Length: 233
Image 1: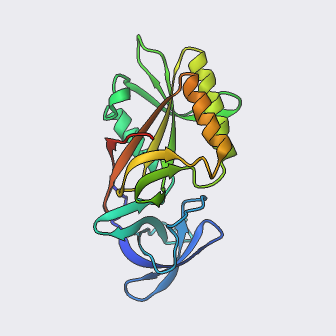
Image 2 (image 1 turned 45 degrees about the vertical axis):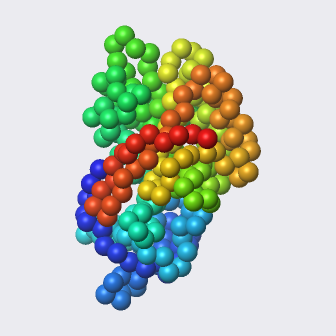
């Protein structure tokens, strides 16, 4: 998935009110950028961090920059835009690049299901059970090489797991896919110490037949692409 505009480097001054970040561009200008991430962003929003932002000239947008990446150096990046995983995964599903789901030809995003919820993707193929796919963006890493989800308590994520379990019990395929928006991690775990209820819900969902997958990303200031499958621990 290519960014609409090539990203430009900047320095983070501060992140505040969840969706705002003051940044310093390379020419010295200080501006406010949109931060498309309501999460805790633990370890990713330290003042002075080198980041990459996407400029825009849309007259309808008040903020002319969007924060997209944290640059860890040595060629490693973290994607902080929580809208990216769905866009990147949709492209990968359409191109049949996810091995476990490559048999499905029809990819329907944002479909209603459960009790007033919407599934990220509903996959259909004649002769196969429908596949309900929920995507979670993973950006937390508190130990070198290990990505963790969630980064804060997520009642919504726990509810989604319960609804996926019901789909599995009804005979459909139900899939939870962790998309790791970090290039410096090689394994994925559930952060049970952060949200024990979510960790328990993952266990119960798996026992009910929910499939849990994890994929990494390749990230540059030009694009984010789905990478290789990662092990779950």
